[in-house]
Amino acid sequence: MKDSYDVIVIGAGHAGCEAAYAAARLGARVAICTLSADTIAQMEECNVPIGALDITLYRDDFQNVLKHPQVGKTEIKEDITNRVVVLVDDVLFTGRTIRAALDELIDFGRPKKIQLAVLVDRGHRELPIKADYVGKNVPTSENEMVEVHLEEIDGDDEVLLAEKAS
Image 1 (cartoon, rainbow, N blue to C red):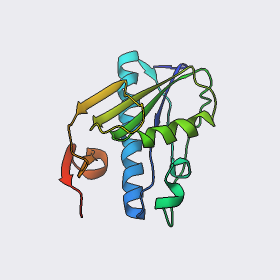
Image 2: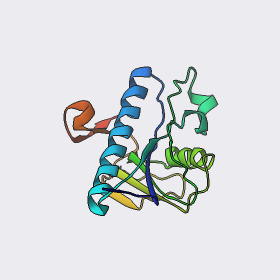
Image 3: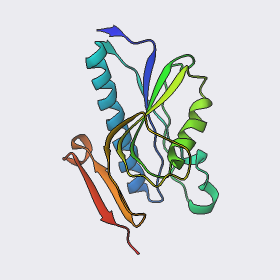
Image 4: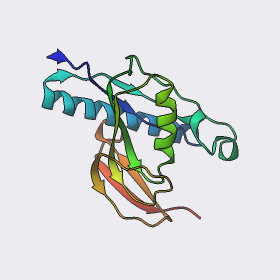
């Protein structure tokens, strides 16, 4: 299998307020990223490098919401300059996670193009962000939560919709 010198797949993530939540979400993004890279590799018959972003310090609510942030690890081992970066996330909601990911990504170089792939688009955007690739559009209310579980991490592939705790 040949190497793909133009494409790199990078998982976007954020650490939640609780360490367990942060670890689960970061793990989910790495698995999604790996699955995406494998899919591209099969279609293109080439190796696709992967990376992961922890956007904790790039969040616009960093100082207001996160009292004791759990900062994870950003791993981008390839130069992204003049490459096509496929940014991958599990759920697209307000667009703020992706905005933070874009801010961090640019610190690593100037990609030729950035594309966004998400498993679930639930709407309710607060920023002008739109995914290039969407697994499923799931209409939700703002009082609902969407959780994506992956077999590699959670033992099952499923999307759960639940009411937010009051």
